[in-house]
Image 1 (cartoon, rainbow, N blue to C red):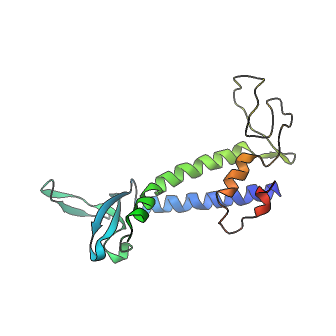
Image 2: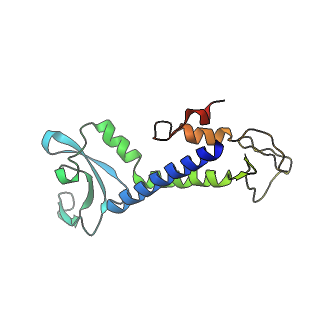
Image 3: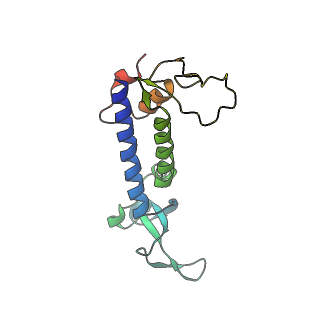
Length: 174
């Protein structure tokens, strides 16, 4: 059952990572909420300038400058903007570069918890205190079992994705 959870987690996180990388390539960050504009004063989200985004006039600089890439803008082919400021701010907060960093960290956590003989372990590169115990994982420094597998760390990663297809509530029940 734990191996099913680990497999599902790795697949789900990898899918999120691939989607974030594709979004970042399409409209590289940093994404910003550039304010209201257009029909209904929709909130506009733009990424960094790209070769495809062209140029635009800057009132501030009184010159032509590289145009920021459109993420959700007044142009309907870019999504038509976002109708609530809170939603636009949320999109900017969870932009691709932050999702990429989070997914890479979560995959590293999974790498540290590769199952060994049906249990989990943490690979220690350098132990500062040989008598210490990893408080969130399954094994002491000498390999003796001190906790359950999957540990609370892995169950927390799974719980964070509990609304995703394929989630099994039994994975996180005690």
